[in-house]
Image (tube, rainbow, N blue to C red; front, side):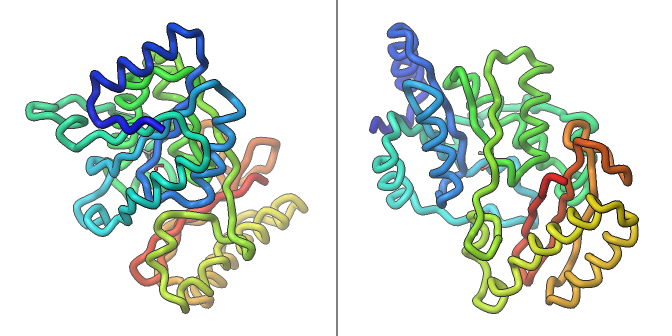
Length: 278
Ligand code: PAF
């Protein structure tokens, strides 16, 4: 596995692969890798000849009161995991490489960023869109893979790549879960034992909403009773629970064929998100 930390070396490596006619797959990450990331890597392996994983904790997608400084970083374990999953190269740029002195261009995401997490994380999706565009331009992969746990992020990235004519295929990959249903997330390591026991209730509640919605129960009532339950379980804040169209992410109360139920809730100091196809 090649470790790349300088842009010219990254470009040289990728150019050599491309000259050899190889298909390149990028898995962008912020490190603190878990089984969900490794499932993306294994899927990447099936799609291309070369798999490259980027590790960059992107400061511009964290708000001033968010967890940038305490975001888990464990490069040694990450590298060992990637090595054992047959990754060809890791791209680990510094903050100065990604945002050199004088950097001032950002991507302003449209309506897709106004829904769900958007109002609770101002500037987040602009930071994500900008960094992913940079990573994709740096690596120029044929395919880039993202997990469906961050479904809004996935749809925004698809839109940005299409709108800016960036020639990459964006692949989504289903959320990987713990045995009790909790969606894997690097942030799960913030949870205390008591909080960890409560956390899977979020997915359980989304499943109940999805089942109710499928059988035609009124959406408003389903959501209200779900919010009530989530509070009783011990979540300290519910940012949203709502049903939205998968493509434009508009809120909806009609179940046709492209709806998902989405939620963001806080336990103690940890914000969890999840979503489920209806
Ligand atoms: O999902 C993530 O880990 C990040 O948002 C991403 C896509 C790597 C951009 O920093």
